[in-house]
Image (cartoon, rainbow, N blue to C red; front, top):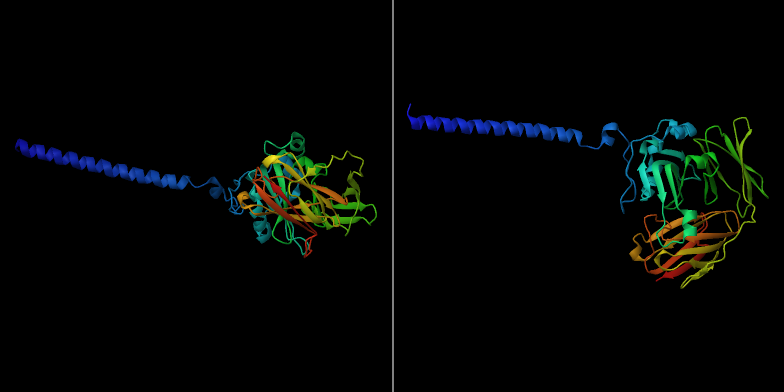
Length: 366
């Protein structure tokens, strides 16, 4: 064999060896890629955690958490210990989850979401447990208001009470709130209590009306309050034998009433809106509506300038006194909004199920 022939065979063998190595490397790469594909999908999918759509798509949605509520919360509320049903994942719940879009919500525990009530009076009442709820105001807000409004709740229980139009009343509570009788709210004339295990019914007493007794189901008692102005005096939690578990007295007045705010720039009002005031200045000012309550609760709808993003936002005014002071901050109906944008803000006040507004208002922000 000549030297040239030997050299050619060595070169050929070297090339074949190199090609074989490249083929093995590609195969190893393909196997590794396959392994990556197998392990990279979110752990939520692997564990079968419910992944519904959160929010309305106009902003970032909160993350979904696979964690269960803490043991003490599970021991407090039997509704969280029962299995999630098809109704819990149904149409009412999915609609309520469109409002779960606040940046203050962290870790939505979707497997623990429960539908608490749904009837001809209630479009839906949905419990949404989250790992953390934070309510923060922008930096220019007065410190007194900040102390009253700001709150952080670990393992919060957020309640979404759907209204009869296209919104929801929203409130978040702690386990301590439930134990101590602070997990209470109203949407129109519908009163809602979240109560711990062992409470079978809730009796609400009024100064000039017969008491209302509501049965508890899934740790929730919901009932229609009397029409017109009523003076709610006392609420009593009762066990299955009718014995008192907790008595919650309502304040009857005598507290210090803060001075009225200055008239807002360009303020106009009519109907049940008796005043539009403002505390502070600039784009972090707090406005206030003084409402003369002819009903037990009102919808307050605010139309904002285009620079605000969402043009139409709403909240609910509750309370049983005939005069109600409703704060209107930049986060009114939109917790992701930290400050006002300049322009004219217009609003209406509407009683539940009423066709015409009960009042109107407007003010200007510079």
